[in-house]
Image 1 (cartoon, rainbow, N blue to C red):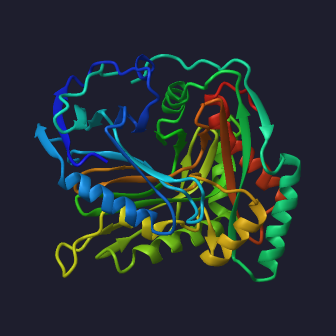
Image 2 (cartoon, rainbow, N blue to C red):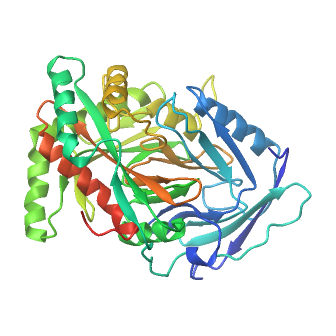
Image 3 (cartoon, rainbow, N blue to C red):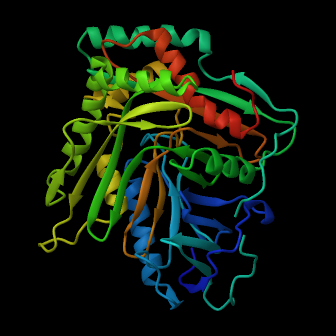
Length: 421
């Protein structure tokens, strides 16, 4: 790790087209509705493992911030330097968690845009073009999809085992995920994948960090100026493509006792994690329905304020992510029993799927999503492991749970140029 980074912040033209495809290095991305970060290169990088991976990462980041020198203009609410990161779902995962400080980053917020460059002290300014995406994604030639650890036909049987555990009283809810492997005869351009997701899912947070690429609708936590926000999603129904039919399906989702129960478990897990950390906490009594191009979800935004003063310093966003992860939306309840059942029934490491992914600034503010609707590419970028899951409660129907995973695989399949299954 460099002892010190030289950071320069420069305002740039917000009207200049940004093209991911013009930069030959795979991107670092956190982007939603024209706001966020698009970056490339690695001025600094660190990896972490084990149950204290979040603590390790925060210690590393605080030290790097303290040793860095920043020149240039102030930005809207974020303070340079900035890092992007992705964390493994499970403490025992063999896949490391990572924080990366990009060599060059475009940060866009509220109609303003800045270029942030980072280099080891004394090496001079970073060089490169300011670029993101207007070009259309292209299909990868020779791409083949294969079953992962559980074939689609076998998935209902896995759900039956989960339902048996629920009936025995072992868990109230468990979230199970299955993987699909996509292989190609040439390296997959992750810039094109991110570009497609940014275009097709503007209401989601598109991300790309260290080979993990996806578009998540679920915000684990945002810390901004002392305000803490978490968006809870649980309870899903597939869209038909017919607006009238989908409106009726949205109404059915909002009244579904099965989906409302699943959603309530997730909301309660977020509230329990934030109580005692925030000064005030509020959330609506009834969830809304979030409409996405492929599915609809029950959604609840939980909002709180950090104490303005007290005996201890306010937690950074990464500490809040640690406190929240894993929520019942991606694990289940009770959490320890659900984690054990996930390990038993999935039988494969999730890696960074369903772990926190996002960014953080020099003051600890930032945004961390849950890595959903995603795939993890191998180091050669010739294969991508896709993931999709769903919450299982007593009223779950195995065939419907399979259909839900197929719907959730759709964004990544399309971004990779794969026709609907």
